[in-house]
Amino acid sequence: MLRDTRGFPQRVGASGVDARLGSARASTPTPSRQALPDLRYEPLGVYLDPDAPRSAGYWRCFATHTGPFDPPGLAPTGKRVEFEGADFYEFRDGKLIRERSVFDMADVMRQLGVLPPTGGRAERLTMRLANLRTRLGRRS
Image (cartoon, rainbow, N blue to C red; front, side, top):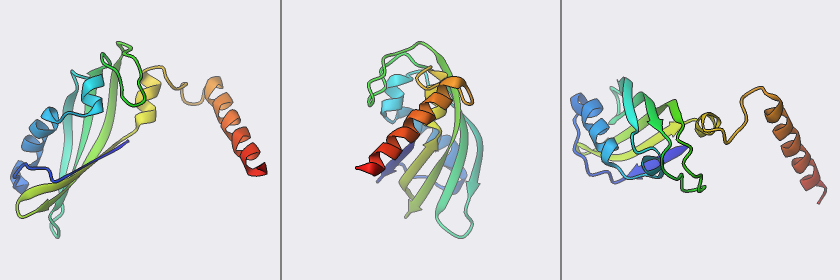
């Protein structure tokens, strides 16, 4: 999943990227925040680009799925999830102007029981059905 926030109002200097963005991120309303209200971030590293006004942060999250994911409208499961991701920040005039967040949503959906486990029989069947649909679509 990719989340892109432009025009972020937080003023940040390079030395305060990790702590200040973590608190700003925690207060940002997102579909993930509604589905995972106890979402907790653990920073794993911050990387600054010495030649450009940008940085990246690598993190791990822990949460319980107690609210609906919207979209796609997945009802709360009560299951705990743990996943890793990264944020990419761009700055202009000392302000954060763009944030892009990436993480493996398929992994989160596997942990919630929506997608079958990797390498299992159900995953192989799902791939066969997807390939069949592709082949049938080419005949049209």
